[in-house]
Image 1: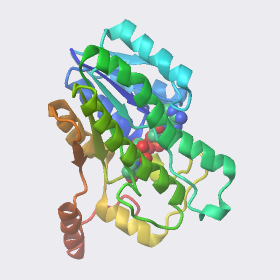
Image 2 (image 1 turned 30 degrees about the vertical axis):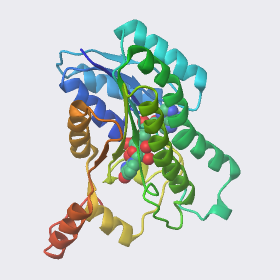
Image 3 (image 1 turned 180 degrees about the vertical axis):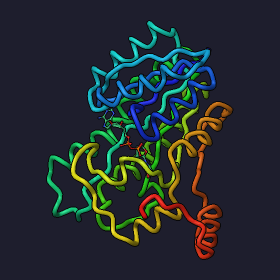
Length: 267
Ligand SMILES: NC(=O)c1ccc[n+]([C@@H]2O[C@H](COP(=O)([O-])OP(=O)(O)OC[C@H]3O[C@@H](n4cnc5c(N)ncnc54)[C@H](O)[C@@H]3O)[C@@H](O)[C@H]2O)c1
C-alpha cells in the first residue's frame, strides 16, 4: 500500500488531493499548521471508507525540526513514503511591494518557497535510500513569469518554486534517476486562498473584473485534485508537469462565457 504526504492538507486543494488519494486506497498523511482545520479534515476522512489509513501530524513547513519529526513519525507508522506533495502556501495582501510589511514578505517567502525547499531537502535522502519516491511541487501565479500589481512577492516565490523544481529534478537524474520530481499547475481554485491573505490573515477585496475572471476560469479544488491525483498515481517519469488550466481550456471557457455559460461563485 502506497503512502502520500501532503503539506497544507487540512483544507482547500491539499485536502481535496488527500481525500482523492485516500479514496484510491493510499495511506495518507494530513499535515498542516492549522490544527483546528486539521480536526475538521479528520472528521471528513473518518466518514470515508478506504483500504488505506490516515495519519495526522501538525507541522509548520517553515520549521526544519517539525518536518524531520514528521518524516520519522510517518516512517514509523507506514514504513515507507511514496509521494510527497509540497502544497502548503499562502496568498499575499494585494498591495505593491513598497506597501508590504517586511515581516509579511519574510513569512510568505518562508512558507511558499523555503517550505518547499526544506521539505524536499529532508525527504530526498529517504527516497534516494529507498531508491524510489516522487516529489510534486505546486506552482502558482508567477510560475510562468506573469506579473501583476499586488502579487509580486507571491509570484516571486512561485517563480522560484518552478526553478527549484527543475533544478531538483536535474539533481534527481544525476543521483541515479530513482526519484521523480514534478510540477502541479492547478490554475484558479475557489478556496480560502483567493479571498484571504497570509493563510487566515486579512480579507482580500476582489474587484468585479477579478470576480468575473474567477467565475469563468475558476474551479472547485475537488475537480482539479481528481485530475492531479490520477496523474500522480500513474506517473513514472521525472520532470513531469501536470497543467489543468491549459491555454485551450481557458480559451474554451472565455468562448462559453460569451454565451452566458460560466460559474457563479461570486454573484
Ligand atoms: N487557490 C488558487 O487559486 C491557487 C492557484 C494556484 C496555486 N495555488 C496554490 O495551491 C496551494 C494550496 O492553496 P489553497 O488554494 O488550497 O489554499 P488554502 O488556504 O485553502 O490552503 C492552504 C493550506 O496550507 C496551510 N498552511 C499555510 N501555512 C502553512 C505552514 N507554514 N505550514 C503548513 N501548512 C501551512 C493552511 O493552513 C491551509 O490548510 C498553495 O500552494 C497555493 O499557492 C492556489
